[in-house]
Image (cartoon, rainbow, N blue to C red; front, side, top):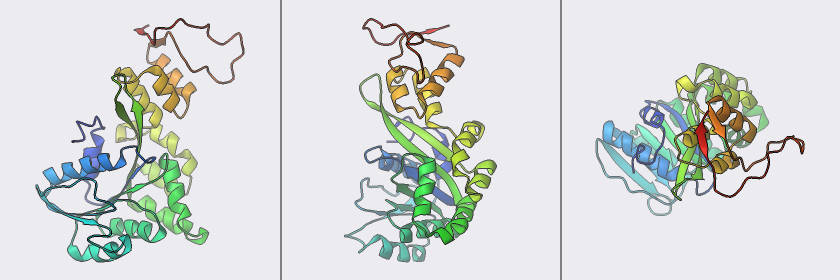
Length: 281
């Protein structure tokens, strides 16, 4: 499936067409990371000549040559290990390198090196959001190397795409994406190790392609793709999302999630069954 068919933001096209940089797709197991990466690789394959190498364990999606030549290597069949495949990758003159999963220091270091040497390197990492992804990267390295790694990330990180699957109104699942782009402010924050301010920078970087989970959930709710309950349950801050919905001119007739820090008098009266109703104020 394509990026468009999966309902993913068009900015993913721009990200995967980058000449160089490190792109991480993060999320819990089963959140659709591999599917999104496959759609991005297919877009690059369809629109840009070059050589794409994937190192996977196992191979989940088989790609055919289109505009690009694709070499897919499966650990245990085509190579003994991720480390062995990574050592031989640059000898094959790749333009794009996909690492199925970054699990250890050696693989993480190789991914950063690929980006530094002028390649586009994509990989997956198990973390819940961009902040945790950077913290996970730092945990691969000893404390004395942290300043160096922050500097390398500030110079080479292209994007971190965090993904969650949310139950949609039609009973299926739709992807909600947090996107951290390499804006000047974000590069500066990473260089200084001020990871805790990244969410604020993402909220302010919408024009440059950034978005937080709450912004993504708001858009899905506004478009009528998900119920209010699902939006609030999956939000990083249910209160902030409620406020955003109200400020957009959408009036909430039924909210199943009580606001934090409310008194008994402030709590809404019980509602009769019937689901959620949304009307323009």
